[in-house]
Length: 144
Image (tube, rainbow, N blue to C red; front, side):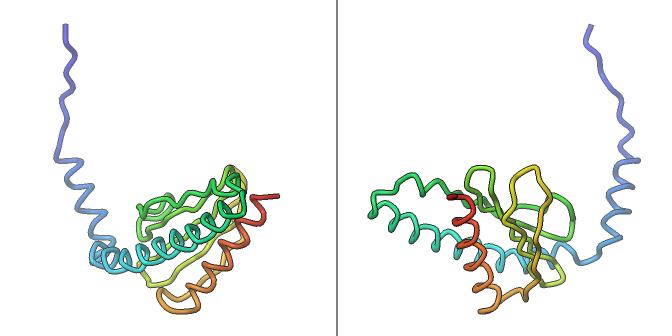
């Protein structure tokens, strides 16, 4: 005998409307900041590609195990998106918030407290320089 579950859809439809009403305009805000997140992610990828080429040229392939994740919904907050950069258990997280700020987190070991954190404007030289500095720090601590 096949078990079937009767779902009362109205309850879930109402819940969706209720939660959406708590954040009017959030979808549009997230779409707007996604462009900035993708720019920062692409910048991180480009910086790491430069490092990897130089490491290979120095016969240090073992230093190239760095991964840049995709831009995705934040794991903790509905009003943010994020991407991660990792080498082994070490990682950083770039959290882009709908309120148009960026929080850079780490480097930290996966499974440990996610800190330190620093806040930056959504776009511009300040956040790009901070991301560059954080990537350098990640590479250093993860290569010890």
